Length: 250
Ligand SMILES: Nc1nc2c(ncn2[C@@H]2O[C@H](COP(=O)(O)OP(=O)(O)O)[C@@H](O)[C@H]2O)c(=O)[nH]1
Ligand SMILES: [Mg+2]
Image 1 (cartoon, rainbow, N blue to C red):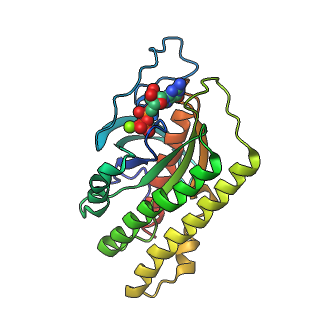
Image 2: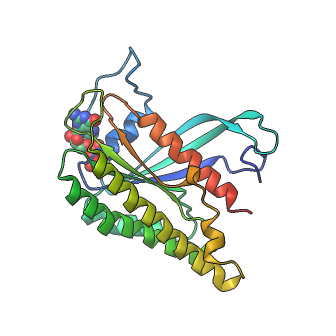
């Protein structure tokens, strides 16, 4: 099925994860209210209310999509539905209930990391906590639906203290984060394809070949206050998640 075919799902579910205070709600608000660095009518940056368990938001976006067969581009209108979780562990049960909900598909995860905290500690926490939660969701989903392709993940470094319109992060650290995310992508793929191959003859390698580099999980840097990279991060994540969903059908 092509992403522009009439019976395509035009709704995508993105969950936002990360430790409390990393700026998840600020990023979601920035994306949904169209605040951008180039806008001359920017509303004043206001502190988002503290998230209790989770908040919901939605935004309709339009993409140009290119058809693989004839190369033509068409507009695709897509509603991005966002669940913005509290990073506080008092609300862990609310997150787990969402992961285990059999009626709910999550297409993508945005994991927000503060650039202003110890980067190595933050990356370690992402791997030991947030990646594990995504893995939990993926295992639960493949058992229910036999999905082959796991959700797409964006690891988003967010600058909560420095509001300058430039992003600086150590290249070596960024590279390490990309490696960690690549390894996690492969792990999720293995979880999905192992479950899938129990009931069919498909192998893990078949599934791996389903994720070309342009659909891979990715690392991004953004700033909610200036709007820098916020729209492009959400849209890139949505595009990749949508294409994964399309690929899964073959
Ligand atoms: N200066 C600045 N502060 C921010 C930015 N994003 C979030 N904050 C502040 O960081 C704190 C936590 O933000 P919030 O979005 O609630 O974090 P969450 O707990 O991850 O949802 C709040 O006090 C925000 O005002 C930003 O881009 N620039
Ligand atoms: Mg919040």
